[in-house]
Image (cartoon, rainbow, N blue to C red; front, side, top):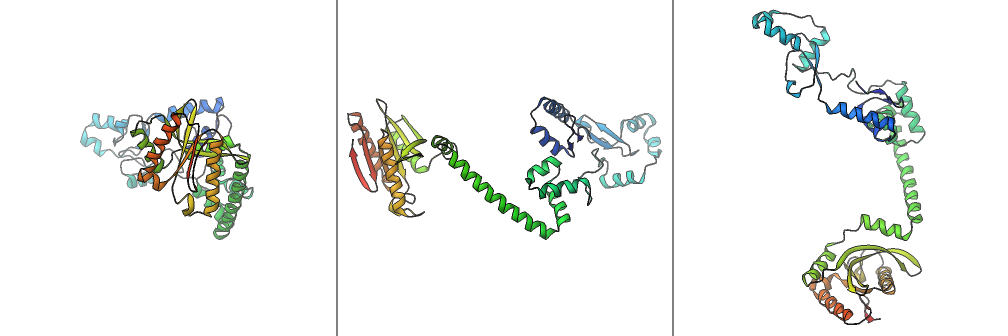
Length: 343
């Protein structure tokens, strides 16, 4: 079929259109992009191959409305010129394989231009050894199937035939364990190499949606006229002696450049009822975070889930904002351990 086989730009063998698509997608140079443009233009045009019910010959159509035609143009012309009875008496010699195709597929060709509708391989051929060599070299499975233009099923079948099904399963499991451990090590190393600002940006991108608890308090604030607020802001903050990424659930502008940070605590995740580890360590970290915001110039209010749902948090926060606007510099409040003070 057109465009299959060696790539016009680099000579790499593409056995099917899936492999060709991956090959072109991964190569941004001008030669491959020109080939990609021509290939997509060719694909956009409708074409199909039909087999004539009368003479058994193949013909190609480019108009989708012709896809139900049962006679090729030559036989259709004979049908119009000879008349129905004379046309029906006409007999054409067809090869046995042609008659078989017509029997199996009716009036359709049963043929798309490919001699082999699936990729074929035999033990010891070039494809089997390329797959085995890639596996032995530890090459990624996705790279192997893309480079060779095969499916994952063929990849597994070839290796199972060479190594034996059970041995391949054991080797495949061992490779997954090694690759998994390597990926974990690389991920930890990459994370350790990131700056605090980079980590904050990562959390902002992946975990910046917030929770229903924060959204409910923000909605209540808007209903009482406080609209100058933003939710779920991750930033780099000095906690103790280290810069760490931290999230402000709600930030509210007070005026004169001052801002309030509101922290909304689900009680399964914070405080004495913390269920995912030692509560004391979690409480200490929450206090350190609140102190870090306070030291950075923010007024800080940490409310529990119970306080937010009861409406007490909203009343307390509105009163505190009024105090800040009347002249108080900064306020600090946590629900556990209970503490409230002004700067």
